[in-house]
Amino acid sequence: MTGGVRAQQREQTRQVLLLESRRLFSDLGYASVGLAEIGRAAGVTKGALYHHFGSKAEVFRAVLEQVQGEVAVQVAAAADAREHAWDQLTSGCQAFLTASTDPALQRIMLVDGPAVLGWREWRAMNEATSGRHLAEALTVLIAEGSIPDQPVAPLTHLLSGAMNEAALWLAASEDAADLEDTRQALARMLEALRVG
Image 1 (cartoon, one colour):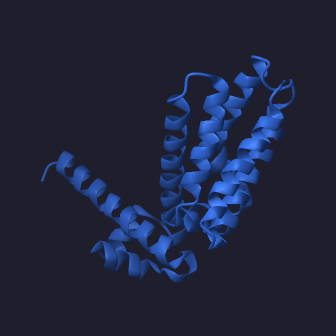
Image 2 (image 1 turned 120 degrees about the vertical axis):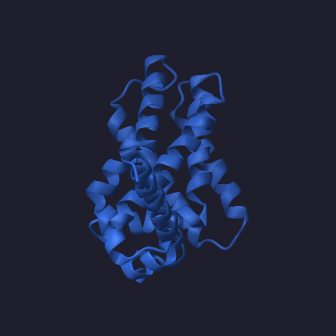
Image 3 (image 1 turned 120 degrees about the horizontal axis):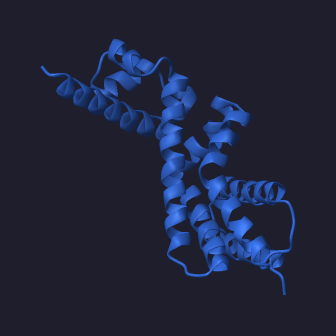
């Protein structure tokens, strides 16, 4: 067996482990999933799992990175589909809210993420993905005068925190109208930032 084939098999095994881990973490939550269960679901031995990941927390971190990366791509795609910077901001924020209300992502991204990795590491991961896009959009809007001149970091954290909290609230809501009400509230909050 050549090195290229082995490398391909290792990557396939890693992807299966991530897929099954993601499904289990999403369905059951981090605390209820064991490494043996992940190995069984992926059809690999515990030793093979340890070959790819040193611990359950490491598996979870890889899954969270994957989820946050996917959400960032959705946010960027929604923003990039718009021509004007203001519309890019509002579309991106609405796309984040929509993506983060997906029950398959909520538990991993918003509930278990900060609890498992700790607030600082989770926040750093968020800032590297969706938070970076938000900061870039705000920077452009401040530079063009659409938002009053101000430090970008506090504004980014305030908006990100508001959207994360809204997503958590929506996760517990049983009223389908709450999503639309939250969308409208977000639109009003963003509009209040705008000059003129």
